[in-house]
Image 1 (tube, one colour):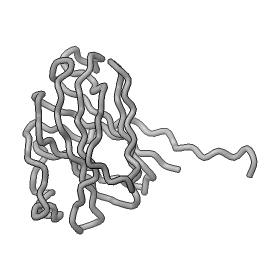
Image 2 (cartoon, rainbow, N blue to C red; image 1 turned 90 degrees about the vertical axis):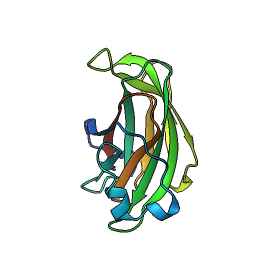
Image 3 (tube, rainbow, N blue to C red; image 1 turned 120 degrees about the horizontal axis):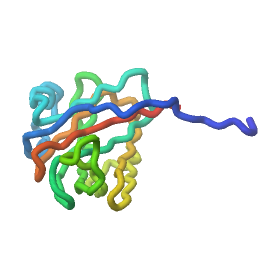
Length: 163
């Protein structure tokens, strides 16, 4: 239909959780649902999208100084099945403050080991807010862990996209 545009309903940023303890990237023998979900909320951020979003945007904040980097790992699962590694993200703290002068937005996200099926895309602008876009592909369980935590806390925010 000419002139018809799809758009996502407006959604707000939600703090999905905070990571304060680093953990090694999950080996192939540690990715079953029970093991991943037993890591706990200081080690992993868990995302459980509702209402079947098409994709999600992730942004990160940290309480470290400018140019501190940390390494995050994103995993996805369907139901009680095993998690699979979706991407490794090196995130670098920028200078843009959040609501407090001690917590800053990450301004650079550098992906590695991406599963291209999820179409991960990053947006980086110096001293702005970096974003990471992922298609969900019907996966309903997501976990983010940090294998190299150079700040005291990494804050993970999510906005779900619907089409």
